[in-house]
Amino acid sequence: MKYIEAPQPELYDTRADPQETKNLLPGKQALGPEMHDRLQNLLRRYTPASGGGAKETEPTDPALADRLRSLGYVAISAGAFSDASGKPLPDPKDRIQVYELFSAAMADGQHGRYKESLNKLHEAEKTEPSSLPICYLQALDYYRLKDFPRALERFKSALVLDPKFALATYYLGLTQTMSGDLSAAHTSLEHALELDPTNFAAAYDLGALDLKQSHVEEALREFQRATEINPDYAAAFEALGELYLYLHRADDATRALERAVAIAPDFSKAHYNLGRAYQAQGRAADAQKEFSRAPSPR
Image (cartoon, rainbow, N blue to C red; front, side, top):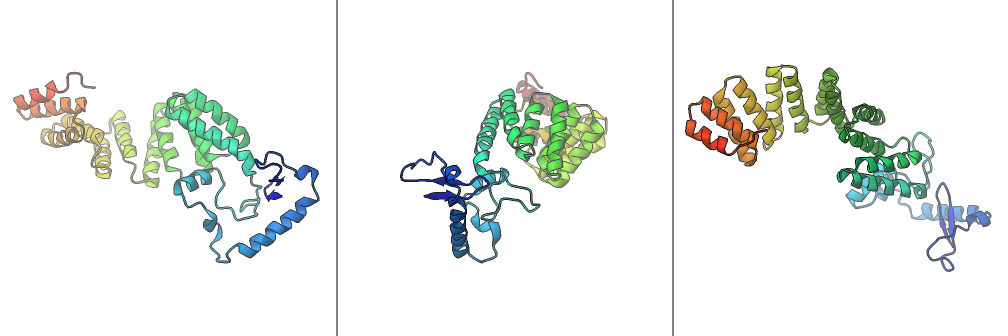
């Protein structure tokens, strides 16, 4: 007989039912307490008394551990059916379908099937109504569908579940930008950078936001910050060069734009603006060469 301790305990006859398809416990209730006691004795006998806690029971594969932890499977001590607050934990059997739905939804989203992804996430949400990964993925799907009101609500819900979720904070800022709430977007993007100082895209987007509001010097600082965080970020160097052109700083523009095309040789807009910078420096031949590389600047 094989006994599995869980919020919904299981009992199988592995000789008659090697695939463990029929839970015998409903018809053998007297065996439940006996098997439970035997299991607890084994746990007490073989669990190391090192004080290491749940970490010692985690999988050794970090990717697997992260995926399981996101669904709440890991960091629970043996035999516990409630979390630190006393809230009952779900049975792992009930979460297999959620995990499969979430994985399929993620694949849909990665291939642009956002509506199909949302359908699976809504189904998973029926079992896991307060799941951070589900909430965040829903928000991303709505954002990519340009349904910004719903995206806004879902990103905010994700941040209620985890106020320090840097990526959700960043996308909240992008959603607020698309919704026209530029002041709130600026606050969110700044906060995203506080939570994750390596987020060069947040610095770039802050620069773009400042330009929308005609805050030229602030935009310049943000584009510079983006290039400092990521010295291989061609878009930031291009934006920096274009802004230098606007400020009639042709030498600075040339340096920034030369860096942009060195990083991204096929970057048409950078070649076009580099041509403009060369033109401003009186370098007509170099300018013409760059213009020939950018027939359709965007």
